[in-house]
Length: 240
Ligand code: ADE
Image (cartoon, rainbow, N blue to C red):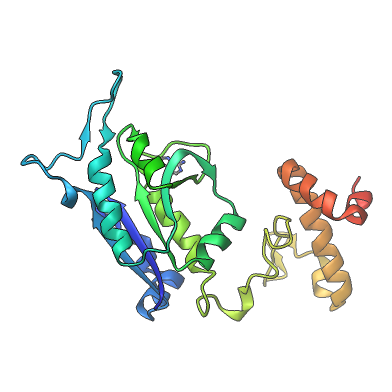
């Protein structure tokens, strides 16, 4: 049985969206993963089909009801009970490649997309949901964040990614940002490709690329550099 993603959302028509295209879309058609979008509104019980209510204690916006969310979770988990239940919210733990590897190694994921001001905290706790953020900015809903998380997972599934990009060389497996890339023409608008890349000296090219990756990581991402430098004291001692 393929890796199974279930998305609980008030906007099921947003899925598969961009994941129906390109690498993820091809893998979806090949049956390497499966996606179901579940409409939270389908679990409303009253005649107005209400899914939200005003916040206890007052304030702006609306809060998703715990009973409706719980029923939607139960329906999703019936299809695959051993999957992590993830809520996409800006107050969640920041998503990183280590978390993505964990989700991709599971039988699949159940993703709950928040809307309005939030989700009743009691159902988050009762279902032991993992709250995840894709970054320190606020989206109008969790759906684009769910698409981001799924894209990151799907490309790691067996048989999805081509041999070329198969993971070992890329950012975050080394702990460094990627070195810069170049292709033909070797001179474009008076800009030459770095001569070392045309030299055919493979060891020198590898050294140059690693130096570039280290420099860009040190400049742009001091927190990533600190972690890398601690694990690679020789590289750290080469740095200016
Ligand atoms: N929902 C709204 N903003 C979000 C974010 N930054 N990450 C995850 N889910 C969100």
